[in-house]
Structure formats: structure tokens, C-alpha cells
Image 1: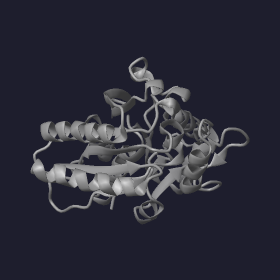
Image 2: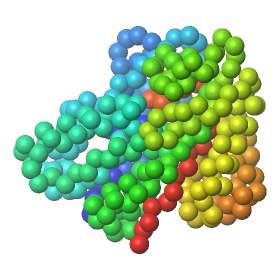
Image 3: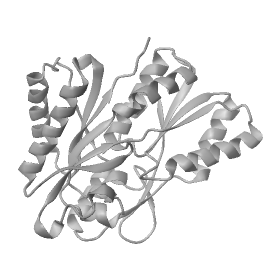
Length: 301
């Protein structure tokens, strides 16, 4: 096993059992339910409770807040005192200042521990795709690669990351300032819902539709195009489905994605995992995100 620890911020959306089994440390985000105090994710409020609140409070927009410098510094100091190394994977800096906050904390740490070996990675992704990259970091660690080697392999696969997804309404993205390149192209007043692609650290319009069935169909079409152009075997990539409030919809989506892979000759019997998109991401997507993250596997040799 490698000689470094794997740390990520709370945007990675990995299930608790996976976090425990793979020895991952998570630096949590915080969310606010419309007004009041910020609540620590998965400590003060769970994802199920958060989604229930969103569904029962339409038109009220929650907020999120990144880990503080002290949150990161506390974790880094524990590592340095123990003489341990770590790789830290943060949400794309185009969506959050988590990466910059971690960098500031590392600079502060090195005032007392100048030889601390901590590599902070701007993953250029988020949610289930960030989770896939975190798991790749664990695979590299467990294969015995050094910290520097693992970081280099992660940078190699970072450009391959894509999320193809749709949402119930553009309102949450608009209210949270994440509308970016979608601005002026989608109107909730007309009932037009976006199909979105995340790549290179930000979101792009991947199509539009008037109903959920149409946007899901276009989401799968975008995934099909990328998979067919980028991979020739199932062993070359990982993928994961992310969903919000409706688990049954995600199960149906998985069945269609499995059929798509078989049609492309990219099947192989590997289970496609379904992951609950966390409250941190739902702040911006609303309660009905649905999509798939795709990432090339890192070289372990």
C-alpha cells in the first residue's frame, strides 16, 4: 500500500460506507436552509433530510459554504505531526474557493512544518465525478505508487472527466450564480429544461427539452457520443450515476445506461453504482438532478 492518505472536501458525494472502507478523510462543507445558521453536512443535517426540506419548501433557496482555512489547517496539522503524507482532492475552483482555502492552509502549515508533504489537487470536477477521482487516488495509493506518482496519474486523467446531467429547473443554478454559459439559452418561464455537460471545470449547455423524458433522453445521447468517441473497452473508464430526490428514477436511468453500454460494445458486467448527490451540490441543482459521471481509469503500472 502507498504511503499517503487520501483527503477530499465534501463535494465528492461518496457513500459513508465507501469512505470508511477506502480510508478516505472528508473535510465537510456547510449548508444553510434559507436562513439561520450554517449546518455541517452529514453531521448537523443528512442528505435525505435536506432533500425533504427542498421539496417541501419550493422557491426557497438554500446556500452552501466551503470548509474554513482552520478546518483544513487542523487536518493538515494532524498529518504533519504524525509525519504522514496526503493528497487532497478539491472541487473545481470555478465553483468554489475550497481549493484556494486548502492552499492557504498548507502555506500556513509550512510555517511550522516546512517539509510537510501534502499535494492539493484542483480536480476540475465535482459531485460523483469528483468521487470517482478520489477512488482512483485510493487505487493508486493501494497499488503502492508514491505521492508524486499518484498526483501525476490523476493529472493525466483529469481532462477525461465528464458529467452529463439534467435538472428539474434552472432556477437553483441561476439563484446560486452557477448559470454561466447557460445564461440566455434556457428559460424556466417557458418550461424549457437544460441538459448540461460539465467539463474543464465548468458547465456547458448540452441541449434543451420541454419535459423530463426528453432531457433524460438527450443526457443519454450526450453520454453515448462521448463514450463512443473516447473508449474502446469497459476496462478503460469508470462511471457513476448521481441522483437527487428520486431513487427509482435513477434505477430506471441505470437500466438505460447499461443498455447503451451493451450497444456500444462497452458492457462487461461491472455494476454501475448509483450515488446520492449531496446537499452541497443540491443547493445549486435543486432536488431533481440526474446524470452520469465518466472518468478514464488511472494507470497503475
